[in-house]
Amino acid sequence: MIADGGNVIRVGYMARNLPYPVNVRLPPIGSQDKREPKIIGRELDVVFPVDDLRHTKLGQFMNSWSRLEQTLSQVLTKLLRIKLGDTITMISAMGTRQVNRSY
Image (cartoon, rainbow, N blue to C red; front, top):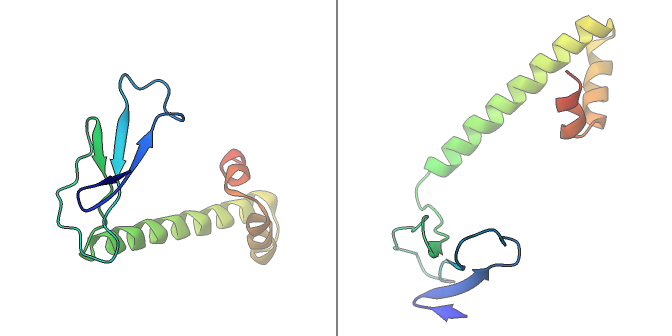
């Protein structure tokens, strides 16, 4: 489907429990999107930010995640009484689910 200035995706199969059908409008290709995003209701918009706020927030999240991994490595090093390098190797081999379940 094509709507004003972009494409539309109908979301229905994966969201069977919604009380009404939902259309998700994608941004136009090749031009800057100036719409105000609608995030509630039957018509939803995907709008990509044009400022650096998104990148700043992503960087803050990645920094926090890295600090969490470092802290977890140090804690496991002390608890398991192994070398820090071995702990880092062990955590690298684990997926996120296993890391979250390890404590």
